[in-house]
Length: 451
Image (tube, helix red, strand yellow):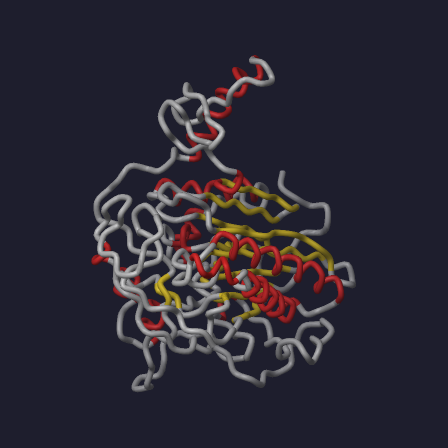
C-alpha cells in the first residue's frame, strides 16, 4: 500500500491552480498565502462499513456469481432507512453511547479551502455564455466559412487559436465545461461551475433490460479529487468503466446490487491504471499524487432501487407526491461524517468545519483498501433518485432541501430538471464543479422518456 506524500504545500495553488514546489509559502503566480492551507493529517486505513455474512435477498433475481460480491441484502422501504450496506450491516447512524470510535482514518483533502475574499471569475457564467452563443450564432453563420469565432463573453472579440478572446482575454467554453445527456427517462448534467478552471466531474447514464424484459435505468457520477494528479481523467475513466460494467452485467441476470458492486470495482481498476505512467513522466512530477476520484451510482428497476458509492458524492430519494419524507440514501466517506457518527460534533458543526470535505474513501492507486458500499431499497410509491457530487449538495445538503429544489415535473422532463438543479448550485455561488443525474422510480418501460 502506497503512502500519500507529505508536502509543506499543496500540489496546486488553491486560488489559481498553478503547480507548486515543496516548501513554497506563497504561490509564484498569484501570491496566494499557502500557510492558510491546512496540511493533510496522517493516512490510516479507510473506514470499513460492511461485514461478511448476510441473509437471502428476497428478490427474484438469480444469485450473484460466487466470485463477485456477497449475496445482496433484502430490499427496504425508504421509510426504513438507513437500509443495509453490501455486507448486511445497517448504514451508519448514531453509534451506541460509550462505544469507542477512532476519528478520521485515511483522511484525504478532496479540495483546498476557498479564500475568504471574493475574486474575479476565471470565465463567464456558462449560462450567460450559452445565451451569448445563441445570440451570435446567426451573425457567425452569415459570415464566410473561414470567419473568426466570436467571444461568448464580450461578444465582440475574436478568439485566437489557443481558445482565448483577443479583446477581453476570457477562455472560451471547452467541450467538458458543460455536458448534458439524456437516455430515455434518465438524464444528467455536469458543469464546471464559476470558480474552477476546468470540470473534474464526469458521469455515465444508460438504460437496458433484465433477462425477463424488466426495464432498468442506471447512472454513475464521479468527482475528481482536486489534490490528486489528473483528477479529470480519473473521473472520466471511472464513470465510463462503471457504466460499461453495468450495461454488460444487468442483461445477463446479475443482481443489480452485485452488478453495482462489481461496477465500482471495475471503476477502481480503471483509475488505478492511470497511475501506470512512464518513468520519465514521474520524474517531472515526483511529488504528485496518483489520479483519484469519488464515485456514486444507482440502478433502478420496476421494483428495486440500488445505490453504491465510495467517497462523499451522494444519492437522495425524493417521492413524487412529496407526501412522504425524502431521504438521503448514502453515507459520506468523510471527516465530517466520522465526527457526526462518533458523536463528537453535530452535523451542522461538522460540515461547517474546514476539514469537512476531507474524504476517507476514494478510488485510486494510493487508496488503501477498496470497500464499495451498496444498499438496496424497495419504495412503495413513485419518486426520483438524485445522484450528485458535492458541487450540488453543498447548496442543498439535507434531504428536505434537496426535495424542495427538485422540479415537480421531473418525471416528465428529467433533462430540464437536471438543468434546474445545476442552475441552483450556480446561483448559490458555483464554487465547485456541479454534476447531477436523475433516475425515475419505478423504471418505465423501454421507449418511455421525457416529454
